[in-house]
Length: 151
Image 1 (cartoon, rainbow, N blue to C red):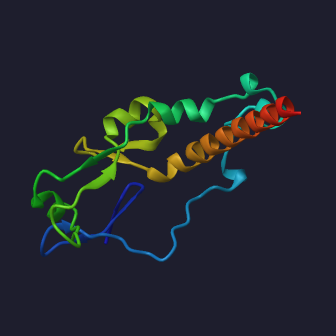
Image 2: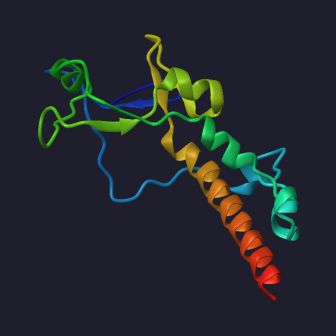
Image 3: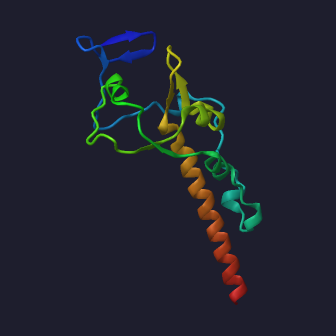
């Protein structure tokens, strides 16, 4: 184990490989006292409006710009580089291309000293949650509109 600046790195020095980190639960800082300029991702129109056209789609629009992909690592050395042991080789994986994600959600992407981009998938959870909330509000508004027309 070693630290460099604000990083904690686990390295198998005999094999010169990074070690995967497995944990039961991962907690990330999220305390309000550590944050500033806090504002809702979704506008108030989402909660208060019953008109379908006025429901905000901020998060949904972000989600629609994302391009989820399936992929294979180029070769097994990519697995070895990060000391990943797949259950079965050749299995497709799911994710995003960091360079593409960076254009839509820059805060979800970081870069190593070597220039490799990394994705913080946890940063997408609030956006995905917001999109679900927006879509549910739109469904509720449409259901209300249909119910009103049926009467």
